[in-house]
Amino acid sequence: MQLTEKQLAQVDAQIKRLIKSGSYYGKVFEEAGITGCASQEEFEKLPFSSKADLRNAYPLGIQAVPDEEVVRIHSSSGTTGKPVIIPYTAKDVDDWAIMFARCYEMAGITNKDRIQITPGYGLWTAGIGFQAGCEKLGAMAIPTGPGNTDKQIQMMIDLKSTVLTATSSYALLLAEEINRRGIRDRIHLKKGVFGSERWSDKMRAYIHKELGVELYDIYGLTEIYGPGIGINCSYDTGMHYWDDYVYIEIIDPKTGETLPDGEEGEVVITTLVKEGAPLIRFRTHDMSRIIPGECPCGSKFPRLDVIKGRSDDMFKVHGVNMFPSQVEEILGLVDGVSSEYKIDIAHDEEINKDVILVTVEAEGRVNFERTAATIRELFKSRMSVTPKVTVVPVGTLPRTEKKAKRVFDHREN
Image (tube, rainbow, N blue to C red):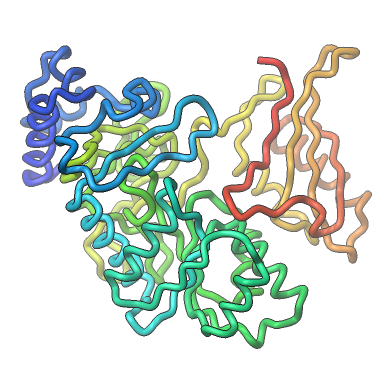
């Protein structure tokens, strides 16, 4: 997808503003001899930005406005290394709320809805983003935040919440708990807006069935405002994203070459009007594709396919590259197996070989031994790796209110 004339002018203005601000990226452009951007060809030659850059600029090196214009900061979860800190101006905060309200509207949510907000508040962008969009829309926000499942369910019943916002992992936990308590008929939810992690078709089907909600994938990341830059419509043919605020391109993660619409690669985002910390060609590591053509819903906003995984989620065993999405695809073929799994990778010194242990959950009605054998064979035929497989009862593996971690590599780096 090519930049429009307006988007090109916006990118040019952002580069000039960054240079003038003397911020980290302004210096990067200055040192590279870049003074602006006048064409698609010039744009595709601009250097990529990355999370590593943002850590190098810690804490506020990427700030492109004076301190008195910064009204808030947010930070990524930062599980490794320094966290990433993003400053926001009043306009950035308002722009984000406008985008988020659009997401709710795209999902058919109105100011008559009651939106239960379970993602975390604080430095993380999730909870406060869901709330700001809800208030901009004029709907009732029920800001429960994460945890305290008893309280969540009580609020859901007593306040007749119609929309649940959550990570897919926490939505699964709530769905299982509602099922266990047999209180499905007391729940008034109609829609679920879930984000922050990719989720399998099996998990999606379970949440849809147990909560009885229409499911919507919301997209975003801390570095680029937060969740709310895109969402799927009721036709579920990809996520519409707001191209008056962000420009998205897809690149080959190995070569950095821009790929044509329809081809899968790494999502790269440029913020067109962000003030506090503009980012040009930010590599997200999310793997997806731009869907060509128009959506049957009639919206002119372009579409990004569901996130297939992350280029940095890949793990390697016996020389074979694997992604969690491939594991989920295999488990989706096996009767009685739940969406939850855990993978442990270790090096066996005695045989001097890497070993992979897959733990999955299955319903009591199926034979665990036969199920394990089926999974082993599917791994062997589809991925040329034969794991050790352990099958445990549904509910054995831990549930989380946050993003679920499912792959654990115990090998020494």
